Image 1 (cartoon, rainbow, N blue to C red):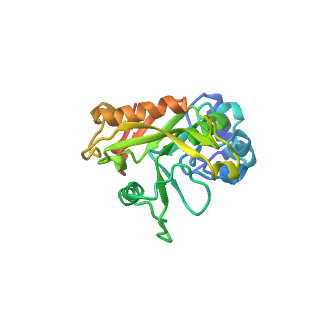
Image 2 (image 1 turned 90 degrees about the vertical axis):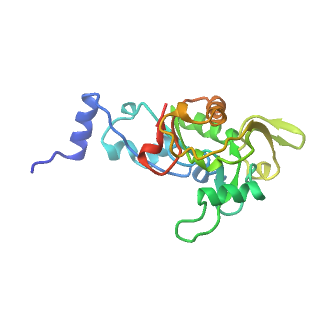
Length: 231
C-alpha cells in the first residue's frame, strides 16, 4: 500500500480546506505560572505553547489552518497536591463530588481536592489561549446537590478582584465570591439531548457559558460516547 508523507497529507488537507483534529494536552498554569487549577487544564493551550510543543510543524500545517480551539473543562474544580485552591470544599460537598466523580489518582488512588467551579480561572485560560468553544464534562456528578455555586470573583484583603491573578501569594490569600444557583436531582446520564436535562442543570451550563465568554458546545453526562450532548 502506498502512503504519503505526513507533511504532504496535512498540507493537502489544508489546501482542500477539509476538517481535521489535532489533540494536544498540557497544564497551562503549571508551565507559565506554576499555579495549577484543573478547571482550565485540558485543551486550553496558549498559542506560544503550541509553537513550543511543535504542534503546527509536527502536524505539517501552518498556524492559520487551526480555526477552532476547544477547551475541555469539568463541571466543578479539582486539584492534585498542595498549593492555592480558592474554591476548594474541604467538607461534605467536596467529599460528595470526589466520590461521585471518582476523583482519585488513576495509578496512586490519591484523593483529589474538589471544589466549586472557578469561572475566574477558566475565563483567564479562555482569554489567554484563544479558546473558541468549550466541552464540559462530568455534569452528572453534581446531581443530588441542593444548590450549586460558581466562583465569579475573588476578594483579596478587602478588595474585589474580577480577574485571575497569576500570583501564588495572592491566590493563597483570596476569598472566593460566589453566585448560587439551584441544584438538580435524578440520574441525568440517560439524557441524549441538552433540552432533556433538568432546567436547573441547563441554567448552570448557560450561566457558566456567560461567565466564560465562549459557547459550551458539548456537555458530557456519562462515560458513554452517546452521553456527550451536542448543542
